[in-house]
Image 1: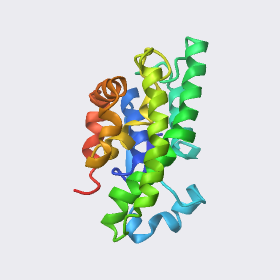
Image 2 (image 1 turned 90 degrees about the vertical axis):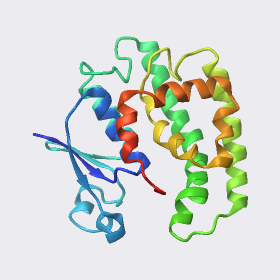
Image 3 (image 1 turned 180 degrees about the vertical axis):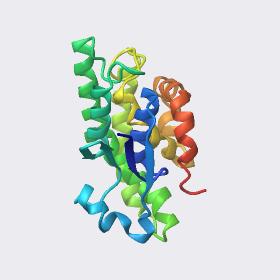
Length: 217
């Protein structure tokens, strides 16, 4: 049975799932969810995710939501296909993938998402940027990226010397962050973070997925 992704190509979490599938070389059916019409808040979508958020992933009888859960499932089920995104043959590296997925989720994603909403997404829908929120989250992200700089001075990628889910989940977020001119310095001012970003964003899988990241265009 075909794999299905329900979502919006330009959304960051949906892009993470599509990127994971691309790294695995897996074909899938994409089902566009029209947020402007509230399709995510009505049936049949709510029968797949009662919280009304994208993306949703289907693999036969298996239905999953939450992007990190989806990519983890894909990485484990299809571990012998494409890129080994969870370092299955090395328990220490696999553990570090888990560590840095948590770091991304708990420390990187919250301030980054807040900045992107306040300065990029919100204004597209008439939201007035709250500069105090931006400043607060830039300060938080600054400290997080200092830790990234230290880590990446010792390792090519976040978890180990191979690309993994820990790196993958940053791509769509940094892509939009870099479109905000006052925020690009957060990446560019740190040589190891910058080199890491330039490397992972040049991956063929992301170049393909990035074509759909068109918010603001």
